[in-house]
Image 1 (cartoon, one colour):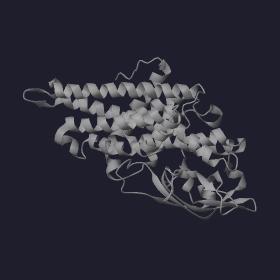
Image 2: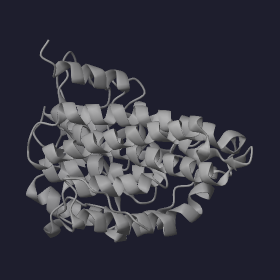
Image 3: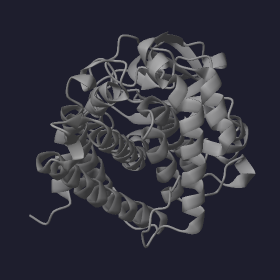
Image 4: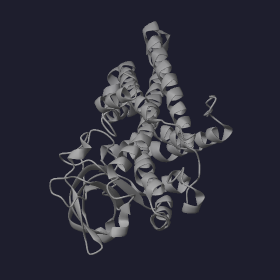
Length: 386
């Protein structure tokens, strides 16, 4: 199984990691992915296996239980998971980019020492609560509030479509709330809500078209309590924390798009070699070989730009625009490649007993989650000198 990719930014260690994650995905995820999807079943056992593989806290220092690897290593791991199943890739992406990363970057030493070892151990998940029933792209429309009373935050409101928030492994969630004492003003802050202590209500969301084996939840806060020490970062800086977190999160969603597109391409290529019509394999027809060539071009361009975006982040250079471009482009090519892969499969691609059907569905979230394509174009435009 040749897993090497030759690229100026790829080291031998990157290729070793790719091989390790690919082997895990093929041996542990692929045999059960279809069943989990069919049953809308989140697997705590499989998630713990991914944690024990070292996929929780990939970029976090070893003192907190992490692997202390670079962003590109993390993105390669997500890419390889998504090549087999986007639900498992989404679980790991949300845990790292949205769950662990803001705690590590903005948390106090006490918060990091208390929470991170539990989240990098492979046993617990942490969520990121931004979206609400009436607030999505318009994050400033959030209605969840927190009032400081006798040393505790009293939280009321609701969050929805939150990954890793409702399963038995979920330990807590970072939420964006309005902490203003003035009813006519809004002050956005981020608060760490620990599930066992805060006693908020969780509800698993089923009947999804996409990521059916990932844990998606609805959270309800009714006078839920968190210590005043659970404020993440400075009071009033919550929106900045959330939006900056999304920049990094977009790299992981781009990796899911890239991995899904690669997996769809692999299936299309394999089918084109095996399927025979008019006495020869589909791959021998120019119309099919042209489709495969177009797919390969898109994959090369998407991978190169995503890896470049990771290099910018690892070198502490601005990458907001590049993360938006990567996420936007990979979501587009994932849609195009999955669609053409179904076309190459013909009628075989329309049934649930073939993985390409799942890939075709799973790509649809990529142009919506962590910034819709429309919002990303606004982000990109702001970085153009016009």
